[in-house]
Image (cartoon, rainbow, N blue to C red; front, side, top):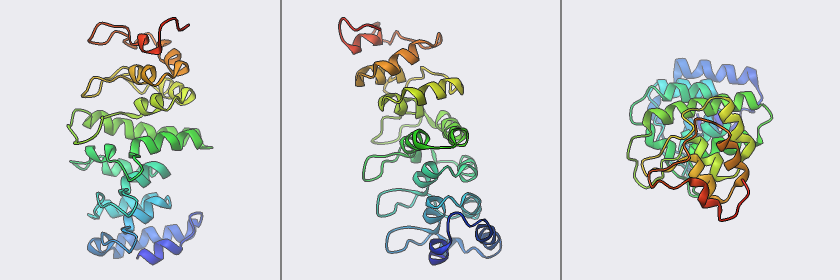
Length: 231
């Protein structure tokens, strides 16, 4: 199965359809969850190549989605990067997947941060924004979970931290609300942008009347941009 997935071209619609039919009729979830020499399961390969429906069939059939490959990534990392929306939607129905959104690979990337970077580079912004929307809804459902060793950032936090003003504006236009939602540690996207010194993002966020610029410590988060800064 691993070899079959590896040799199928990503742009081969016919072969992809055949693969998906094979998944429905022949998949052995035990073998599909076994890693190869690179630590990749069949689900890793399917998600990394954008075989969305095949990946969804695998997870519906019980394939493991929390196994890490040699880069420290789960299938969720690859799905977020490649925009496997059907797979992600199917995964959202599974309990206990929330912390996987914050799971870091060996380079410190989470599925949410990879999805944000993927949107920035995407030619098809509409499809990429749809992927972010699915991940945002998953994050909203699990944001209160205490996942060990993570900051609990959502897609708007990551876009703000990276200084991606256009992406932040797209998220606001797409009504990725609430815009000022705090993490478990009390961080808002506005606070993150200010701390990183991204004034362009701060201006975008402050243009929204629903953004709360008064944190619990009663100081305007814009003080973090430094004294004398022209907003």
